[in-house]
Image (cartoon, rainbow, N blue to C red; front, side, top):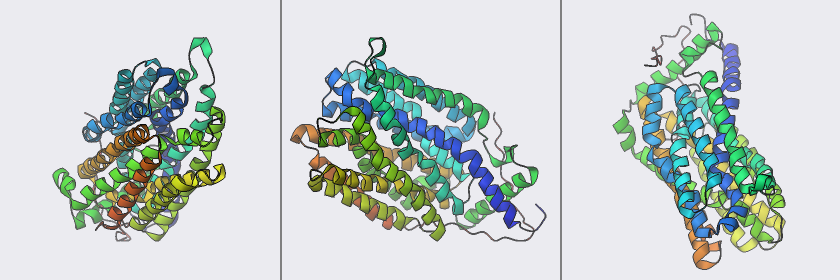
Length: 450
């Protein structure tokens, strides 16, 4: 672009890219999270029908993440070769089919198997999208972009809670409601997978939905930021894996996800436990309250993190608030239903609102294959916590007859996460490249399928 830097055009461009990419990514993640956590609602009926104990359910809920981790890094690296459009299509269609097969399980081994393969099918989806967003948004906009995308997580639970608990009450054609839940909630992934192939654009250079001047400006802006990163340090794949802060970010995410999924996978059961006479449908409506609060907090924290250009302490504060609320629920949840829901709401606000600022940190100093590999490593190691949390909570419940010790363990894990993120050397602050009137840009490689 040979004209002087046009700030108005940039603002319009950023809005246009947001409108094109974020709503679609939002829908994809709703489909992903729905098929990942709908088992938490199915458990209200499924466990009794199949004779599953809390330990069996916790193992099945968590084993998803072992399959997920197994193919996480290879999948993300493969995505950089074949392109996001093809890879995301493959992920969505295969996990949708496998998610529907959960309706046919009868034994614990079948439950473990289908959940494990569901994790394998979905592997590299989240880090792939995070890597993809890093190729379309600069650091100054990435926190908000990631936060808006990840609002799909609490939004999914808002939608899933009443729908899933309604489906639990149907018995069409002699099938239990939890079976229909898995079938119907698998369909969006398959449909969106087909749409993804035709809608997604791999890189800005291919964005025919932008005007030529907009496309040129976007490529220039992204190249300026890449050039600024290159002046600091270039990370090859091995260097990215060995970077102390990448390792530490993996530990942060592990302890965080342990607490997140430990509670998320049992939240409907915990709410039901407050009043055993409560209907499943009422449980669904009450569970919406913590996730509505989480949705609002995710947007506000992501925007504030971008506005003040700070990441670490936003994440740490979210973890601490969530841990305090979880700890408080152990002693105060029995006081009243409203107080219990309030504490669960604060907990969900914290563990969800941290996503935006957290995922802006690795993209602030990594790019290319190093970024794809490191983000996948952070996500894969972190998601081992998705197995540890539900399994530990279910096991402790089975051993002690109470969830209290398990909930305190989840709270302690979040405190460790907060301490680790504060200790990071890299702050995740946005890079501000120089803006000459006539830019000498670095030419970015254009993805071409082979």
